[in-house]
Length: 126
Image 1 (cartoon, rainbow, N blue to C red):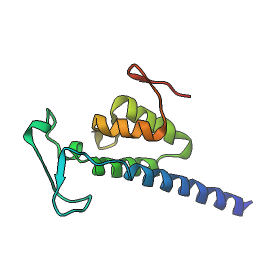
Image 2: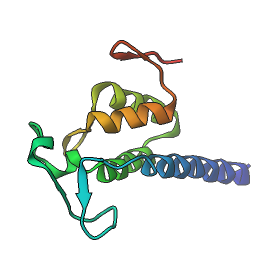
Image 3: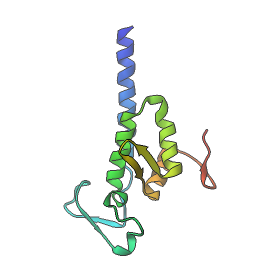
Image 4: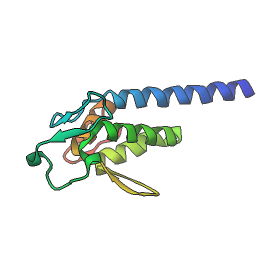
């Protein structure tokens, strides 16, 4: 029985890892230019593309994908889907340090990855 539990735990970890890898593989922000080539590198962008939010995290899709991976890894398996759907719908996630605002393009990439259909502005859960 203990081996079955350990096997199930390992399968859950593998599912979370696969989902995190798929999220991290989503496209970067085409409006930024990374300096140094790495996905954790500094970037520049045109001031006309900044909009009303000046926070670098908001425009750094790769940083947002890493945060989504952290959220996936911290969540219980049965809640991951609901958590990600709420992020896609609301564009934000609340954690003990405050609310994290995700870029609408990141939410759209996530919606497509998860295969969620769109009906108006509400996502239809299957």
